[in-house]
Image (tube, rainbow, N blue to C red; front, side, top):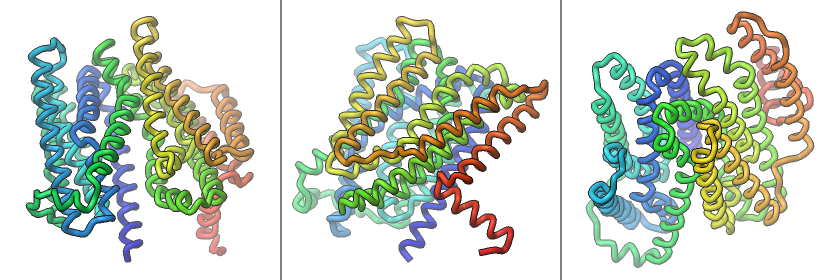
Length: 490
């Protein structure tokens, strides 16, 4: 019964993520390019809130998951209450710091920080509530609130702004309110199934778990979370402040479109995380190697299939849309960011292997190194070149590639595991050659015809050859099952 509930939640989680991604793609193609300045401002507020909320959480949500299994029901409720209280207290200090900075500093976008603050508080509590819902195996509905509400509200606000129904600040206010509603709805749903009570005497709680261990783990988790934000979100802050809000809108929308490639990877990583942890715990390295390569090949196949479609069809697709001029500015960023996502998918679950091993601290070292490379590269592009956002995209690509290489080398050194083999190389060659040949095939004056025949040809050739050579186990299993269903053969 427990497995049935878990699989149902996993299925709903996947469907919701795909639905949110689909809404985001449609908005990025048809709505956000109509006002790139406002789009860039929203991206800036989003990046600021993503930077602030890990400080407010300070690792409490991760600590909830870490120490939850060792406690009885009463102590679990105490731990949850302690986590909520710590977020409230830290948020007050953060708000005080913002006011002090406002009084002493001369930051031209300080008004946007005040918009980002309530979004960050909402995200902090939603993160905690989501972790508690995960323990209760009721993650689907909180994910629905978190992934769908902003994706629906934001395009509506764009339309109202473009039609002069709302001004910029009114639109930003409603954007903030949407996150407050996510916080309220998620809390309402969680407290239907979980009653934390009003026990705020935490002395007995830290009699059960070590206060020192709790704070050490929380601070480590906080450092990792903040490091990830600095590593992967810093480009949006730099572009907005040092180039322009319009450029930030172009860059942010392009990254959104490219990031859609990795949705299948998110689901697979979540599904296989307990399996990886179990392999490492039992030191089943042969089984881990098999699964490591199998999933890396599957993700590379999916990513390469999607990236080939992007390379061969995105410009024809953009030329067919009313926002073609704005969208064409995104094309180079999509190519670079999409290739970065593809390489990330190709390395499989290297982050999970490190995280669930005794060498988990290396993740923080790797992220710190990524920050040390990414920020100087971004600043170099801004101050010493005229490459603009294309240069920023290349800087991020170089940083993330080095980040993944470092993790691969570390895993090989400690476990003698690699996600690559001859089959992987064959598949890379197939995709590379087919994409190159189809790209240089003659086109027509019809963008629609070019899109259909080039993308369609790429899909047919790559799927057929990979299936014929049996390079991806899951693909052959799926196609064989589909064939037997149509033919009636078992």
